[in-house]
Structure formats: structure tokens, C-alpha cells
Length: 120
Image 1: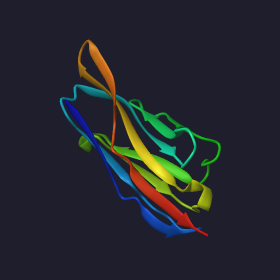
Image 2: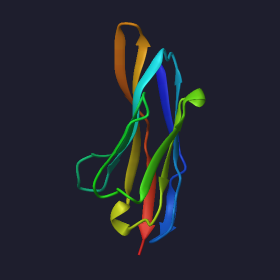
Image 3: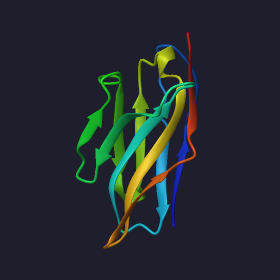
Image 4: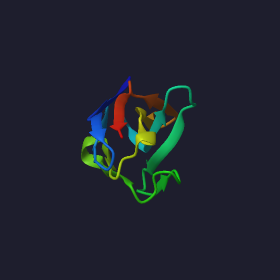
């Protein structure tokens, strides 16, 4: 079993910064990718950013230049540095980890989500 736990969301004024983190733990053989998704009220969940096992990153156009994903592979942890936050960034942010739990089994795991609220 694999657990994915986010922390570090909160309330911030527009223009401010937050740095939530996400840690994966449990029966981990290797991690193929970890990423952040978000879901605002009444909207579908959308990809924010992802980092591959090789360190390649992708970002949604809406966050490019403002958000940065980084990782500590020794801790199976990723961080999301969010700068210049806007009210439209308000959402529940979910961490996703694509984990190989054995040589033949790869599954995606989700965290419980962390609320980010940006006030205008």
C-alpha cells in the first residue's frame, strides 16, 4: 500500500506565495512521476504540473512562470512553489504519484487534497 499526503496549503493574499509539499510512502519500488492537480468549485480537476522520474517537468499554461515543482528523491517528496498567486488559483490541490510497487505493478495514487485560497 502507498500513502500520499499533502501539506502546506492555506489562505494568502493575491500576489503572495505558498509552498505546499507532498510525500509518498509505503511499498514503493520506484516513482515514475509525481504531480499536482487542482479542482476549483464547479470545475473539473486539471493538471497543474508534473515531474517525471527523470526530472522532466511540465506545467499548465496558466501557471508557467509562477509555479515551480521540485523534488527530494531521497524523501519521495515533491514541493510546489507558488508565487504571484491570483484569486483564480483558488482550488483544492491534489498530489498524484505514479508508483511502481513491484517490477510488474504500477499504479497511480492520490492524496486527500489541500485547500489553497487566494483573496483579492
